Amino acid sequence: MGAGLKLEPRTDVLGVVDLQASFMPGGELPVAGGHNIIPIVNGLLQNHFRHAFATQDWHPAGHTSFASAHPGRKPYDVVSMPYGPQILWPDHAVQGTKHAELHHDLDSHRIELIIRKGWRPELDSYSAFLENDGRTPTGLKGWLIDRGVRRLFLCGLAADFCVAWSAEDAARAGFETFVIEDATRGIGLEQPDGHTSLDHAKERLTGLGVTFIRSTDLA
Ligand code: VGL
Ligand code: ZN
Image (cartoon, rainbow, N blue to C red):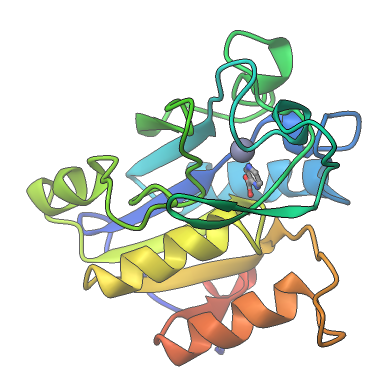
């Protein structure tokens, strides 16, 4: 993508995914360098996008995605849930905790909607659109359609989980979808084939027509 991708302020929207201290160094599920994207995201909000929404991972204590809720299991084990395989995580983004708030350095002036997700005790939710059962909607799709949004630009944490799953569902919902790569960071879990969850996410998304850009590509 060359420099100068022209934005259409009325119908382009920035989605800021899970920009919470829980996913930054010092948090419960830290993504390496996660805090470094805050100034980039603020630049996008201040200089490029007129409309934006955010997501907020928002789990009740004892959430089913926490390894601590499964005796004998440890973080990053995979368990089988009624809705399919689920990676177990350290306890994170617990409702009402300091780390679960949207990061205080995030400039939230232009954030018009905050979608909280992962609040159903027995169901995890990575995507901004659908919970991990692949069919329970968060309501975001209706909001975007009602608002006449055509193109969705995603940034935030983590590139290979909540950003990737959101991008996938956005593309499947018919939005032209972009991931602003330098405004994300990934967890990068090792996969059985020697690749990481980040490699897999990028390959899957590219196959769905998602475009990867950098913030400097935006005019
Ligand atoms: C996330 C794992 C669990 C994310 C949230 O924000 O990418 N990943 N909960
Ligand atoms: Zn979570």
